[in-house]
Length: 136
Image (cartoon, rainbow, N blue to C red):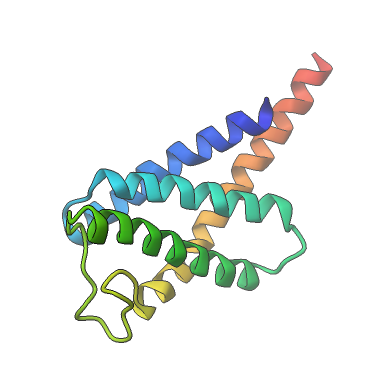
């Protein structure tokens, strides 16, 4: 039960935070970005809790590639298949199909640092809460 609650909380937090980042960065967002944010933070949470021996740098590299992969997948569905044009990076250096580019992959690397902090905090709070409920 603890895992379901943790992942639900992390998914919701990712959905809200990713959307807020979009609004701060571009001035607007789209519901698909909330979905992406939820998937991303849940994936980062899984990485943080299952690969505890990896260094933060390695986690950030994997995390930034994961985020880029999720953005590419959602972008292909939302922008290309559905034609919604939520974003277009066609003018960015080394972009792929206008959906992803190295600039944002580097930005995701930096954003992974506080994201992993959130994941670590959720896991610690949840673990402490579970220990208290076992005692009482």
